[in-house]
Image (cartoon, rainbow, N blue to C red; front, side, top):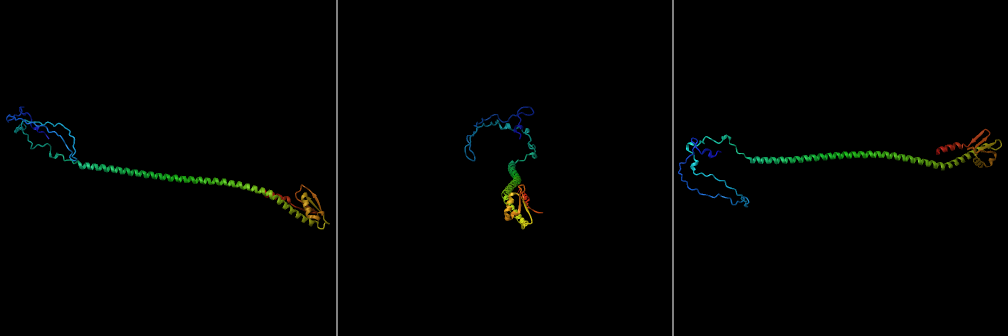
Length: 277
């Protein structure tokens, strides 16, 4: 808006002399007034006193006469057809209150959406981490179970082989002990039993060969102990037998003309030693 002084030049445009007032020059004295000063103030809502900050009051321009402000009739500008700006250019009033509220609501919604997004992202990350941990835990448990099964199978194989070796060794020892025991205990019993049986068989055969003791001659050859045992069994018939002791022989041989009878103790003892070995 243009000030009023723009339309009231101090000098005339034609001759450069200022306007002269037609009013009389008698000027009444002007009254003097003191400038108003704010001495106290209170808050409208609470009623509490508010400290006063003094500030100088600007001076107001004084004019001698009101007529000095009124230009001549011919020099008054035509303000009827002149406007400060076109009506179409008049700016519309801007209501920033709703937009500010909308902006604040938008920012709040964005912040809430951001917080919700962060919470959702964190929840997704925690779920993914937990799933990864569960998968790793399952894999570790499976690997551990497989390792335990493999170690158990290996241990069972090794223990089986070790126990089999120990059992075989123990069985060998038991067999050796049994054979040794049988050889040391059963051999004399078996030999004596077989020897007695052989002596009895030879005695029966000799009696058959002697008959009445007149027609044939019987000769017995062998170890002295066997011959003595055979003579004890023959008793009275032993006088009809010719006895020849030979310690190099194992069996007893009975000869009567073309007939030869042996006890065969050597072969039987060899079979016994093989069985007890």
